[in-house]
Length: 128
Image (cartoon, rainbow, N blue to C red; front, side):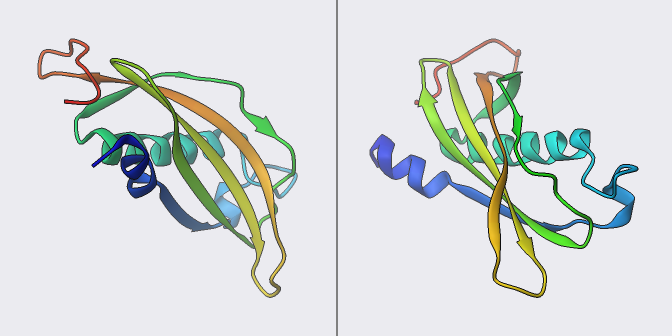
């Protein structure tokens, strides 16, 4: 399987409902919760791409362009955006979907860097 096919097959989507226990005092999704969900989707994407142990080493700029209100559905989409020797980057977008309409818009974008490691936690090549 070539790299483009692996990127395509490892793209990961997760849907979540935004309930009141995940919101802040503005009744919108708490930023820390959004970042946790993004890192989880990025980790799954990186692991599905490499099929190796992966660890997060950094998160690049995360842009919160729209508030995510309680009572909406969010879709998090992760896709490999860069491939290095021992590392890769995963871009994650969060989309808001209103529950009772077909309205959908991008709310958050960020990128996470992962390193492939062996059983001794030493970096190894992402592609075997």
